[in-house]
Every structure is written in structure tokens, then in C-alpha cells.
Image (cartoon, rainbow, N blue to C red; front, top):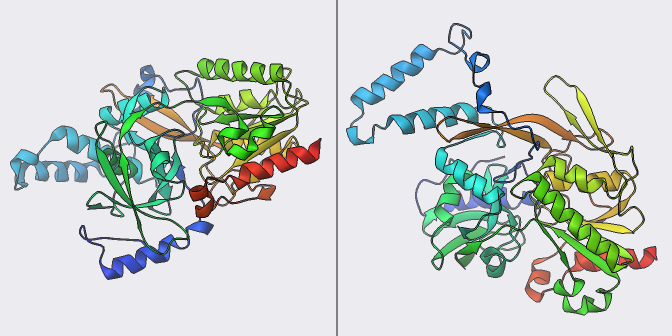
Length: 433
């Protein structure tokens, strides 16, 4: 597929045509990775104390490393580069590390500087920050909106999952830009405005969307009334419960589990005859959180998911406790923004015959990353596992979760405030009675 390369801040005619060739095919290309939405292996962060001789490799141990060449280039840049003021050893080290990590061509394996690590940690701990409230990711080298956060300025302005970011204010996004570069340009002070130029599948022209930045919090989940999705669903508010899981992270895994237990108790006390799990635009989080939630729906001993390591060894994750939601009929909603841990839960309920999945094919991210904290406050996120569904299928861009009933939510639906995916879920629960 043709790559897009823009030379300046103007979209040349040839670049524009190339972009449209790529953008119009987005409907059949699965997503690759979500920034700030990696699959965590909860409780398995690599400790800094492990930074010993086992992680030290010299050029003598790897004859292909050619570290002498590296130092030749390093010294040349230090000695001869025309703008001496731009010689910054810290940035050179960070750039070298980023380049090395990027050479693996795994968008989920990333090196974060100290500043990027702080931003990442704040986002995943649910702390307040300023911005537009949208998860960004890659699709075939393009930077897209993976999931706008519920209640965020991005949602209010009309930004949607799958939107391709073409420009940020007057800056045209280049094929060489990474997600963090664009995140940094989009973020800003509360009350200021950023304008995103986006391509949206089904639209003939680019859309210009001004968004006023606000204070963003990242809720993990909530119980919502059906009438909050569409007013004419109000007659079902007492019949069917909705758990909207925005992400599988809190400050800690136990906090997420406590919040889940609280909502489950409310569902049981409510006497509902059906349950809808809304996992749309859920970019994922802790693997163990998805397993924990799955335990409430499936019998003891049922396989929820599997993990495969670099040696091909497979570990099964089975239900280990008596579930509290074993009998209630369940429907799961997913879309293109459902990724990682949300796919694990949806796939587990689907493949074990516990729930019907409604919506659109998911993101397709089935890898888990460990976080290696480094001594200067930076961090390395390394893909260490593949996530498998109960039948052994690996979640990836070619094999996402395919809904039992495919139901889109069109541009017109968004404009009119309709939710045909939720309507279909209600219909399925009605027929289950």
C-alpha cells in the first residue's frame, strides 16, 4: 500500500490523491496498536533491580552490532554539526534508543522519555489532565482516533473512532510522525482551542473540527441507564442494565476490581432481566482485569483466555471463583475502538456461548507489554506475550473479534443522536425473554 509523504504544511495535489487512496481503504484494514492503551500484564512489571549483567550486551557478544560505527557517528555529530547549540547528549541518547526500539517495527514496543512516562502514568492512573480526551493509534502508518473518551471535549466536538488525523492546526501530519509527536501538538491549556483536520470514511472532503481543550479525567466504568444513550429507550431502564466499561485500568488493579464488584452488586440488587456490556471505544488495559470480569459470567474451570510467550509456551487462564452474573442474559457491544483487554472479555463470552456480540469488528490487538522503568525516569514498554482467545486464536489485525450481528453506527446516526447498536442489543434481550 502506498505510503503518504507530505513535504510541507500544504497538501499537494499528488499527496492528497495518495492520501485518499489509503484513506478510502481504511474500512478493510485492521488496527495495529493503541497509544496509551497497551495490554498490561498486571503485577508483572520488570523491576529496576533486574538491570544487571543479564541486560548488558557488549559489541563483543554481538558481532553484528558494529558499535564502533555508532560511536563514529556520535563523535562526528558532536564535533562537526553546524549548529553547536543543538548538540544535546541527552536528546541524542533518547533518539538512539527510540530508533533502536522502532527498528522492531512493533508499534506496541516503545521507549518513553521521562516526560512521556509521566504523561502515560497519569493517563492510566485516571488523574486529571488537560487536553481533548482521545486515544490515538496507528492504522497502516496513519495516525487515527482509536477511542474518544466518554464525556470529553473530543466527544462533544464530534470526533469519532476511526477518524484519520491529517492536520493539527496548521501542521500537516507527516508519515514520519509518531503518535506521541501528534499527542504533544494536540494537548494544551484548558480553555484553548485546537483544530483537527480529519478524514472520515464515507465523507468526500476533509472535515475541520475545532475542539476546546478541557480538564480530562479517565473513568474506568459506570452503570448507565439506557435512556442516556437514546431518550426513547427509557421504557427499558428498569428491565436491562448497562455497564459501560471505558477502560480496564484504574490507579491499581485492586481499585478496578473493587469498582467492578460494586457495580456487579448494584446490578444484582436491581433485579434486571438482562445486561448489556458496552465495550465500544474501550482501548483496553490490564489483562487481569478482563479475566476478573470474565469470572463473573462463566462457570468455574472455563477458559477465559490464553497467553503465549516467546518460546511458544501457552498458559491458560480459567475461571477460579463462583460468578455473580451466571444466569442473566448478556449482550456485548464492540466497535473499531474496542481493543486489547476489551477484546479478551468480548471474545471469552462469545466463544463460550455466554453472550452475543453486536457492533463492528474490533481493533485487533492481542499482545501484552511489560514496563521496564529506567533509572532516569524513562521507561521501556516491551511486547512479551501474545493474547489468545479460548480456542487458541491469536487476536491481531487480521483476526479481530467479529460480531455475531454486525451493526454499524453511521455518520447520520451520530448526527441525529441515534444508537442502532444499542437498539439491536435491546432487541436481542427482548427475544431472550
